[in-house]
Length: 79
Image (cartoon, rainbow, N blue to C red; front, top):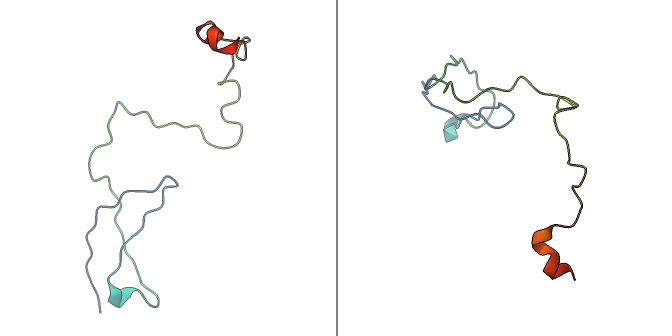
């Protein structure tokens, strides 16, 4: 038995796609043949970060020297 499924899927944060199956196909092995293409053009204004992996942001994040100094706005609450 062969069923044709056409679906537009949204990838999870890890890039995985989850294909819903009919109850008849939920048991045993299923052979899937797929053509993967964007459903709509990728917006040019959304940059795709090439950064990934441990330490990829080294030197990109900093904290001001006075980060933990008391704030003048809350001075009256801290007295």
